Image (cartoon, rainbow, N blue to C red; front, side):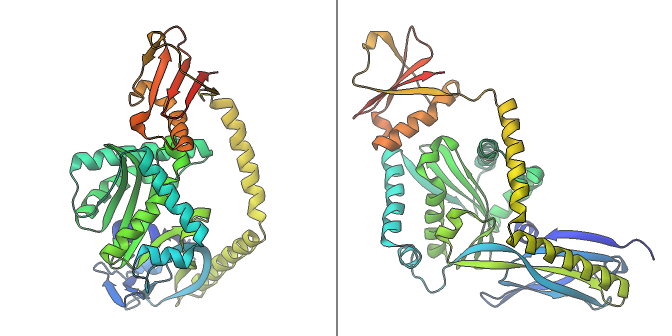
Length: 393
């Protein structure tokens, strides 16, 4: 018996990210709106029949039909991973949806996050969908890449999208122009501070990659970008806002459906050994899922976290620490030099300044930042209500 090939796929990423269908499927049927999407590149060659295909992350609203016209194909089907989505069908606007999903207290907090952000900064929102200049596209992808690097370095892990970043960047521009993808951006003035890459298919918006400027961490930009994108969905007829895999608190807060992704293991049913191997792969995956439910995987993640923490202690030597003191008044002006925190030179001071604005509900127009002439390690943040002295350690 020749060596059996086993090939793995991620349908959620591949279908939404390239709008292509694997050649062993004839079409994708969207159960949420009863529309078909035919595969223009069907292929049922002997090569496909000599491979076992493991297709992961099949969204529950997508139904895949096997192309078994030449080679007789069959699939083992089972659930392995969970995902999260906001099903907007039956709701007329975002307020109605929030009333269904959140308590009165939760809705008040969410509106408070929005009001605080818009009070402190010159905020506006933009969805690039069907139109974007190449200059804006290059800038936003560069910023998104930077946001992901900084945020995940702070968390001590790595975002899987970075592994195929150049391919992602190459494909997404044309998809935005074709309304198959979009970039949602929160701006502070002209500066992007939160960016989401979305994919669009019929009535579905797949929220694929999202990140933000960690200097604004206190402002809960992740909650606000979901709120604003849900508003966009209602205004533009999208009924499913899919946040996909990854179990995070913000998804449980916003999503009204937790679903099971389907996994299909496709094999040539005319070959008994292929069926046996496919069955073995399914049982192995089910065992992994069972162990995960028993939290066995947490032992691994805990060990990995401890290892990453050791690495951080050894390598993260450029981390900047501050001593923060509230002061009654600022020193005499002749001893101070005002600085512009928008300059790259003062990138390190942005987070404490924005934290100060968040805690004191201060608009950027009222904020001044000074550096005492004879004390280069000291910075004074002056607002309308309070002053803060920050000293580099």
